Image (cartoon, rainbow, N blue to C red; front, side, top):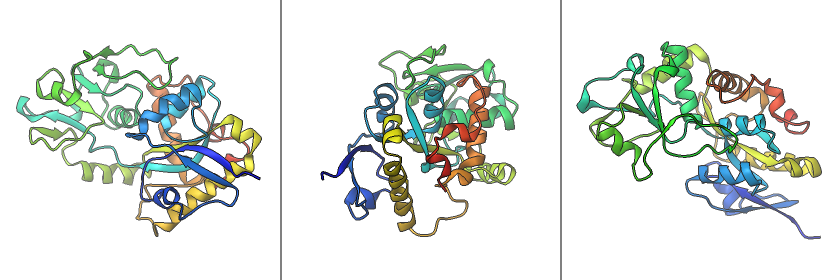
Length: 289
């Protein structure tokens, strides 16, 4: 009998390399890897067309896809987790800028619906008291979920986000890094800010998890469980994680970050209501730990 081939998009993370090389594989199915660089360019076809069987996906994209009835199922397998404080910049040539001074400013972001953007805006609103509605948001791309109505200002098609910051057309940008000495972190000491935030919240900000199509989840729940086991084995192969573990696996390990990003996404009107964590999964993936 032919082995099942699953069209798969995952970034080349250290914990995925053994799966991509074939060193770790299943006896029941093959992961047929399709490369997208950057990985986030695969999110739109997965949301809009279910173009793959298995796909890495930003958590806010998934939450919005769920809100619009897209036939996708989440696995509690984190592919990318990171503290977000280092992904906000301002142009120091125009004077110092701090998080609490963003109201009335123009802030650029690739898309208003990016997960990094949702995390940073949540931090600004809940930890710095920033009124997000008093910021002029400038975006550069459409949301992955076509049904979302984006009311932000769209940058001219030929303009690049960091160049607009350097040219003084933006006061700050979210979701970007740069080695340009003129561009400084909005949070003055990102590592220290992140450590303080983690001590208070106890949350690792998860960015990307994994989804499968609802068709696969319903027809072959055993295969979906096998995919999760393979991903988990890939993580185990990289050795004991540092603390805090930036790649939580399982429902309970992901519960607090999922609850918080659901809260932030709801506050920012990206989703219509607060979902319970269990609602994000199906009967098979809800049992994964």
